Length: 471
Image (tube, rainbow, N blue to C red; front, side):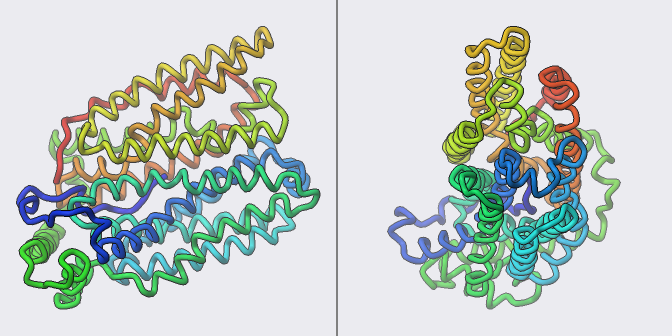
């Protein structure tokens, strides 16, 4: 679950005294601005929909029959191919975002995802389904690279950190729709039981491709292309009711110009080797790479993509029950993650991460013990315990890893190293996801609950998180 680069996590210190008083919902232009940002945030919903949909499809007899009852490596391929497509687009997406603006890659990504959804929904062979999912992942990367960046660059300064954190959090909004769609469609006695959820996967992209033409462009990108007047007009319209001489607007405008000048000067001097040149940078990269892998290798991948196999291992094989629990879990996840994203400035990133790490280790250990108890005794109480600890584990995960992996990563990087450092982070996320999605079904089939013991090896705290630092 990775997104694009985020410029600043919150209002800079010199800006606080210039912020306008009053609630945002009482200002019509701020309402309009946040509506545009909501349009950007649904990019994350598309990603969440995919993971939850694939979880649900694995419970459907019609889907399994259509694709030769995939298991092991084939099931892993059907899941991970979307991430392979995303990885292939990763080197190209930043160039599109910087060269064409923020809106164009979102439109292009939405168009590719719609095309992939059409091919996926009409699939009659494994090859067609695999190709469609590759295309969806490829398109998603372009949209996901630009959307969080545009969110940060358009947001009102005091709302920037919460809105940026909400980007990854809304992964669960898509997961909720997919889980409950599958819960409703599994009763359809035809291939539409799985084709219907697949068709609906394209809905967020259809909304974006209809409306993104009218959304404002990033002031930062406009200034970088010499369109200073257009940038000033966007800032004034949405941040100061059209007054381009407003002190806040002038502060933001000059800050962006200075930042771009610094970025251009730094880009001529900074190389990839600088990420590891100094002890401080090596520590930052150790944290960033560990955070990327830990966010996917902490046990969450088992439930995110193979929840039905976890349920099968504890004797819960009824399709209706599996999909019902999945739907409730996604609603629970969204509530916890939104709450955590709104608390990030008040509580602090480091506190949330450390609390999350301790909670995940504790509850995953309990999940492993109760799974072993069921395998040994067949106890229904142990099976119920597994379900309870899955919910508790995800509650701990959602405290930090859902809302903060994007914003925290960017905040601890020096300005001139942000783009390169975040590219490394995205690459590490994709690699860990591919391994997760491909290896998990093979390992679960071979080892059952004993595989959880191997997952514990990845659950050691990835590093000592430094104190909270804002750019």
